[in-house]
Image (tube, rainbow, N blue to C red):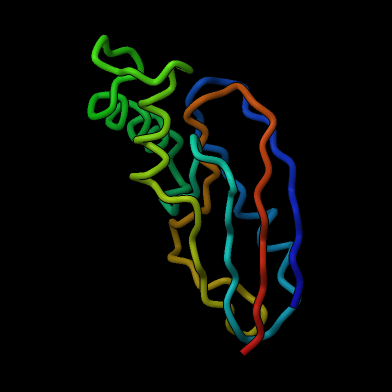
Length: 131
């Protein structure tokens, strides 16, 4: 059972970064759960298709339509209200089953760090719990 802290740097205002391989390297148990968590209010953790990169672009496009970055109604002085909404919709964590030392993911699933207010230096944690 361990807790591993990772630093990650986004390059764009909105970006989904595949962190699946990073999480897999942190597995130190045979059976249990793995939690991926970020302590930021303008980014999130998501599970989505990892075979076609256009899916990430479509996700960003769709969420931008629902929560547009620029809207005259927003009152938050930092100008990142939409990033807070996107983060809340995605969530700041995901939990995975670990079986026989491997994450149980669907064949097309990947784990993504979702940046909505970049570019920035961020952190996320991977916690494994045996059981």
